[in-house]
Amino acid sequence: MNTKPLAPLHGYRPNPQLNKQIESYWDMRSADFSKLRLKELTGPCGPAWSALLAGKLETDKPLKILDIGTGAGFFAILLSQQGHEVTGIDMSGDMLHQAKQNVLAAGCHAEFVRMNAQELSFADAAFDVVISRNLTWTLPDVMQAYREWYRVLKKGGRLLNFDSDYGLITFSRKDEQKDVHANIKEELVTECNEIKDELRISTHRRPQWDAQFLQDLGMQVTIDDDIAPLVHVDPDMHFDTLPLFGLNAQKL
Image 1 (spheres, rainbow, N blue to C red):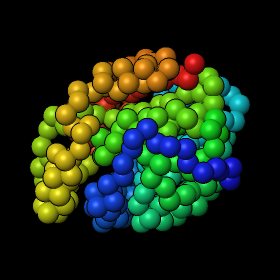
Image 2 (tube, rainbow, N blue to C red):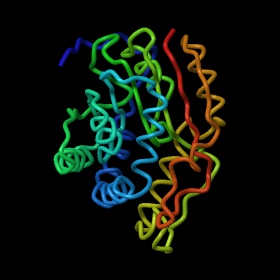
Image 3 (cartoon, rainbow, N blue to C red):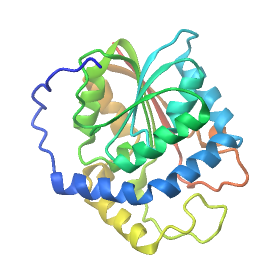
Image 4 (cartoon, one colour):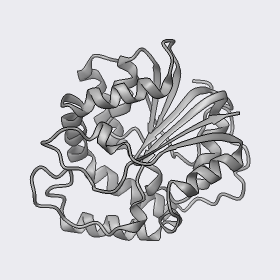
């Protein structure tokens, strides 16, 4: 793997205690989260996501793709099945364990590395595409993350980020079994709210804030306000009602 020492990080100051809390939270969620993503992958949502990603990438040639916050490997599987060379990173070791198992079971290949999305150890211009789903709302320093993602993109490369403006809501426990967050323990719901409310990104309105920041970095940005109707197509899975925005940014 082509890596180099990290350059100075624009005043970025890691918060080891908060990072550890976030890592521990997702470690505890990893097994149930993996089951959720596998249900999504093997149902109607999997082909819907695959079609959407293929349309965004607009190419038949293999691309080098960095899947940031890969979680249980959902995007890694879909993109590998399309013939791309995928590297997935996550700060949660337990999530990466799930991802490796899921990719192996799917009969495809991806590389996985434990890494902080805000402190990438990859060389400049290492990837054609950086992709992420439902990650940026969990990061202590999204500005630094975006700077790093921009750095590792090749000129003309594309950043795809799918997320929601979770700073607007308070999570609550769900008992309806079709809900994708059903049966999460109350203490984990409380911890998730506490973490979310501590993060600066929760004070910004999205995706407008993200788009402006990426434009300031030197990217051309288009926004899909809500792709949920295109990908949340399984009647047996009830997702969040917040819009799922899509950011498509190209490095100029």
